[in-house]
Image (cartoon, rainbow, N blue to C red):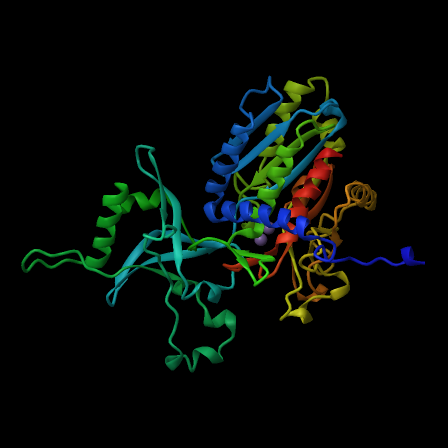
Amino acid sequence: MENLKYETKSIWDKADSKQQKIMHDYAKKYIKFISENKTERECVQAVYARLQEAGFGDDLKKDKYVAVLHNKSLFAVRKGKKNLSEGFRLVTAHCDSPRLDFKQHPLLESVGIAQAKTHYYGGILKYQWLARPLALHGVVVKKDGEAVNIVIGEKASDPVFTISDLLPHLAKEHVAQTVTKAFEAEKLNLVIGHIPFPKKGKEKLESPIKLQVLKLLNKKYGIVEEDLLSAEIQVVPAGDARFVGLDQGLVGGYGQDDRICVFTALDAFLEVEKPEYTTAIMLWDKEEIGSEGTTGASSRFLEYCMQDVISAWAPKATMRQVMLAGKALSADVHAAIDPDWQELHEKLNSSTIGYGPTICKFTGSGGKYGANDAHPEYIAWLRNVFAEKEIPWQMAALGKVDHGGGGTVALFLAVYGMNTIDIGPSLIGMHSPFELSSVADIYYTKEAYKAFYGA
Ligand code: MN
Ligand code: MN
């Protein structure tokens, strides 16, 4: 009678010490990856370097092809044994994460402090970004086209930046406000300098602290204030990701949504060297702000790449035929039940951290609006793929129905008619500057994508 009931189980209950070591060692590599790559550009560059090392290039006459768009999105494909006209296995993930972006006129000074004004990118709880060390990552493109990469705040010898927060002594009225009212975007100003530019004699200088900041930027990067008009400077949490807990069973760090899927999908893609079907990985930008823009999932980039690949590898096949025969995983993170906010989750249909990658049949919100809603036939096929490789996984939906929701890129894949479903590890504190993932989920997410690529 045991088989009548279904129950998800913790991976840890079944993992012996040898298995735990394998998972721990894998998490170490992951920690390095997310510590070193905190923007979509850095992420795409790192992935491209690994693909190049593995023999991928821009020649479609060969079996391993990679294309990058605007340094922010990437497509790579590997020829399978079967003809492309019979379909493909595609995993997509996104490289962008919530953060604070410099405004185009960022610099100002008052009351002894120079600040940089920001505009937040993606869904954040503003108070999570206050009173903590922050780093700058970005690119400044000069008028002559030269791109200057900027990273300040990651090395131990670097200074960091911060957004100051109110002292409790003066917070009497502030604490009585609602969170939405209490934290204003225009107060998310980054402390960037304090020492004024040295003046000569009785010379009167306007904004001397800002001037000194500009002088230091000029000395280090050869840029002037006007160059910030053509710049993308991102403010992200400073420092490395870390193991969390005495048992080191969790990973804490910034940008795990969705670089945890980027990292695991890339490994899976590279590890399946002789796939039955053509395999592909697509890394998007702009997912956190609705997938718009030239490098977002609603752009035509994937389609252009597929057209090129079809012309080279299956010239007799039509785009329609190939796309309809494709199978895709929308690799993105899910919300794990937070031990302190259990009342917001409907437990029977929620993801538990450490119980394996989470499949989400539909995302969206109240009434399934904005959902892809994967077909049961496809879910059944995946169940079988995972069962054969003994991959632990769980099925969940995001939070209680009336409490919100969220979307992924699944619907942008679904427009082509290919089978598509969301699957990825669940996080505690998603979108916070220090998200938590399970060492066990990281490993088995990679194994799940690998099983999919090999199926
Ligand atoms: Mn995501
Ligand atoms: Mn997100």
